[in-house]
Length: 596
Ligand SMILES: Nc1ncnc2c1ncn2[C@@H]1O[C@H](COP(=O)(O)OP(=O)(O)O)[C@@H](O)[C@H]1O
Ligand SMILES: [Mg+2]
Image (cartoon, rainbow, N blue to C red):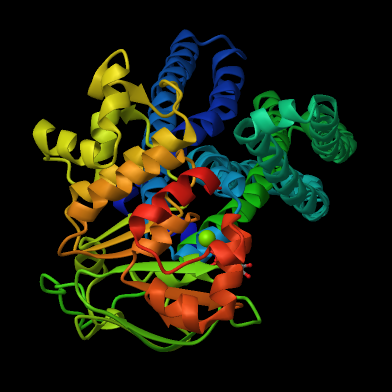
C-alpha cells in the first residue's frame, strides 16, 4: 500500500482537479442520500392526508436531486479522468526519461517486453485506480457513513436493531479483500508474462517462421492465456460466492426492519415514510460494499503495477556524472588505458585483466582476438558505456569519469556491432547525430562510407523511408549507413566494432580506402575480421581471454607473437606461412580472397 501513497504523489500537480472531482462526488452521494428523505416527506406529509404543496415540494426536491446527480456525476467523471490522465502522462514521461538515463548494464539485463508492459499497461492500471477506483472507494465510504448517520437520526431504536449488518458486512468485506487481493496481483503478473510472449513473437516473427515453430508458439501463448483466464475466473468465483452473502445480510436487515418497523408502525411509533426510507438506506449499505469489492481488485493491481514502475524509476544508474564534471574540451585523440580491469555489473568474473596501452592522436588501432576475448568490451569503455572496475581510461589526459558524458560522447563516433536504424528517411538516419547537417555534408559522409551509390539507386534516394514499414536494407547496407552516421559528426575518435562484417571484401576495401583519408587526424579503433584491415593499422592490440598479450604493428607482431600468427592463420583462413610482414597491397588481395 505504501507504493500507492507514493504513486498518489503524482496527483499533486492535478490536486485542483482531484479535489473538484471529490467535491462533485460528495454532492452526487449527498443527492443520493436525500432521495429516501424526500420520499419520506412525500409519504408522511403529502399523502395522509393529501397535501398538494408538500407533494410539490417533494417532487421538486426529487427533480433537483436528479439534476444534481446528472450534472455532478458527469463533472466528477470528467475531473477524475483529467487528474488521472495527468498522472499517467507524468509517469510515462518519467519512465521514458529514466530509460534514456539507465546504464548499459541495465539494458543488458532488462527484457524489452517487460519494459514495454511497464510503460503501457502498468501505467494504465495505476491511472484507472486513481481515475475510478479511488473515487468509488471514497464515494462508498461516504455512502455507508451517511446511511448509518441518517438511520440513527431517523429512528435510533430501530437503527440499532439493524446495525448488526455493519460488522457482518465489514467482516465479509475484509474477507473479500484478503481473498481477492493476491488473486488480483497474480492476474497482473500473468498479464505481464503474456505480454512478454507476445512481444517476443512480434520481434522474432521471422525466427518463428524460419524454424516452423508457429504451432509451438501458439500453444505457449494459449497456455499462458489459459493461466490468465483461470486467475480471472478464480477471482470471479470468489466474488460471486460472497455476493449472495452480502445480499442475504441486507435482506435479513430488511426483514428485521419490516418486522420491528411494522409493529412500531401500528404502535404509532413510526411513520410509513420512515419505514420506506429505512429500507432505502439499507440498500445504500449494500451497493457500496459491492463497489469496494471491485475497488479492492483495482487497488491490488494498481499496487502491483506501481511497484514495478517504481522499480524502474529507482534503478541505480551505475554510470553517473560527477557533480563537478567538466566539459571535455575539443580533444586531439590521445587514448590511454591505465591498468584497466573490468567486470560486467552483476557478473562474478573479470572480462578484462590489467589492460595497459597508449594510442597517439591520429593512429589506427586494430583490435584482434577470438570471439569473447573482450574486444567489444574494450571499446565500450572509451565512451564510458560502463565504468572500469579498476584502473582508468584517459583521453588527452582526462579521466573519462571526470568529464561530462555529453561532451565525451559527442566527440566519439561509434558504429556498433548491430547497426540500428530508426524509422524515418535515410537522410534523417545519417543526420541522427547532427540534425542540422546539409545535404552536401550528408552525401559526403555517405560517399566515404560507400553508401552513396546504393542510396542513389533507391526509388526516393536520400528521402527513402527505412526502418519499420520502410524499404528493407541488407545488413551491409545498414552498416554503411551507420558508418556514414558516425562520420557525419566529425568525431575525433572513431570506433568501428565489426562494422564491415556484413559487406563484401571489395566494398570493405573501398570503405577502408575512403576511411584512410577520413581517419587522418582521428584516432580510430577498428575491430574487423579481415587481414587487410588488421595489416594497415598502426598498432594492433592482441587480446586473449581478456588479457592484452601483444601489441605493435603487423610487421613487429609477425616476428614476435606466435599467437598472432596462429590467430591470423585460423581466423582469416590463410595458412601460417602465408602470413608475411608485407604491405597493404598484398594484404588486400589476400583479404579479398579469404575474407570471412
Ligand atoms: N553485457 C554483458 N554482461 C555480462 N557479460 C558480458 C556482457 N557482454 C559481454 N560479456 C562477456 O564478456 C566477454 C567479452 O565479450 P565481448 O567484449 O563482447 O567479446 P568480443 O567482442 O571480443 O567477442 C565474454 O565472455 C562475454 O560473455
Ligand atoms: Mg564483439
